[in-house]
Image (cartoon, rainbow, N blue to C red; front, side, top):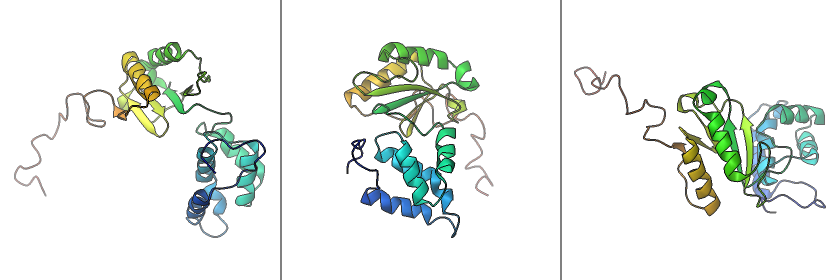
Length: 205
């Protein structure tokens, strides 16, 4: 069974690889607490199903973990990481929370809309991109931030996000993280404090 969305006439079941992965997560919890594995199992199922979960998948996981289906649905509908309709190959999630907004998130979203020709929640005709707005990607110091798949792309400008989208569409390699000359979350221009600490007398203590 491929990672692509399954056909409508097929019942959802784990692939052999994902069955092993699901059991690995379930085994992390004490006897009687296996329901705590619901979040990673939803993630595994979403990936197997091509990027979204369905009613059938939520019921399957409920049965797998011996929990009420409504409990799985509560989790799956509370967290925005779970999609409930098909998404494109690249799920472009623009952070719109205050730090990103102050640093130009609206401009990033506008650039994405114009370049892709879709509104928020829309998917391009070729199925390559779905555009969404999310709350707090948790990388505020490197705002504005866009999450695509499992990667964060930070310190973006309208120009750099369009370049990123073009590379993804062309199948070219892209570099996650800061899109400027910044080391991880260090200040612009590199470290500015404790520069002389290491290597001085007693500095390695």
